[in-house]
Image (tube, rainbow, N blue to C red; front, side):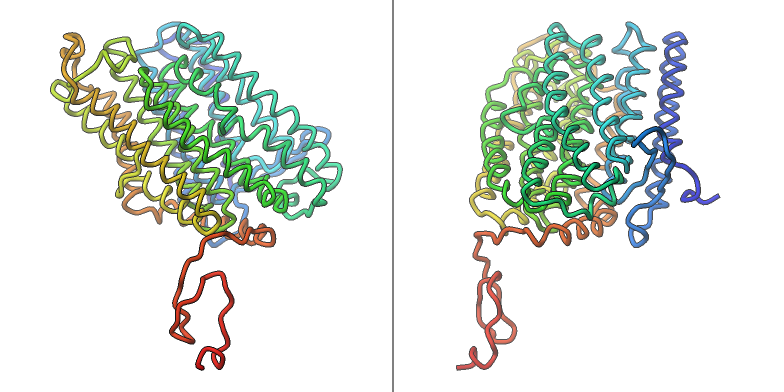
Length: 519
């Protein structure tokens, strides 16, 4: 049977739910392999999706449709953008289960069930083709993450989990009201239909702001980012990996799927707001990261800076910028997840995240130091790693719209190199001030199996990004075609040679008549 004829997406949603129910009723020794088996099965199905997806075929593939109740329909389907984000989710999930294998000892069954439920909801967000179904998946994802932080988190876990829940919930109530108005206006909740619906320009502004209230918190954009450092510091290692790896991408996906194509005129009007907030985020959070003493907090602030590059890329209204933003999302999901895993490795040995407690561990942990260096360089955006490709494309696209935004976003990359290399130098090459740190064992086989696959994909994306650009290219072109009527003129004066006159002209200016140019 052909994969396209099977309800692959429904199967991918069902497997973790069934496994989660099993985990609740078995001993810890059984819950771990059940969770790992379910996430690996979903990863295999994700690979089947990737291989079976036809970039030149229909825009929406693997579609399924059934009426549930009232206005909500069970409508699933993916395009290239959804495919890459689902693949990111199913790739990171077995790694999260592996990372929790020894570190989580209390209520193991419930912990595994929460992660499996999270996987179902993440895939649902990227596969939903019904507006209300998307909203249910989008909001329900709060619940398992709230439990993971609140039950298995650190000392201040209750405060962090409430802050995370309230921040992300408040914005979404406004979004629901906007969704109900859109359904009433268009007469349908079908997302592909709504993507081609022209909403009144006056209404677009209010609708855009309603969606922005939710997506800006999820990204998170400055100044509604303050829940993220607390959530990361208190969450267990695997919770931080999935929070940074996938949950932050839901905001970017929301901008890409709803805000831009459904409200193009409003999106164009709000470009100064988005660029302004992004510029502040890139510089401010990078400076805050420079003075952090807690490793997790430093990486959390770096996430806010990287997500600001994503928002700049998304609102460039051109192919380069939007493709770059998606690649930054994928790269950040892998690299940031890997950095949190690296912190988890040494935290499991020394039970502290204070940077000053470590030093010179490249002597006694050479394999760990090598992998940590690779992920640090990818975070900085070293050519040959995944970080470079996305940031280069995003900034190249942004340059066509705003030279100032590009300049300030680029300073954020320089600051990013500052705090990441400073972190790495202190941990790997600093003086060995702590005898316990100097006695730590290098990474074992299980930890190598967690980090090595991410390292391979980070290098693969950096050396041959076409693998990841090919599925999204046509879908990005469709979005650009939809929004180009509202695209901003841009302030850059890029000079090109006019082949008809062999003279330089500004790229955005029309060609001169040949006769006029020959005088």
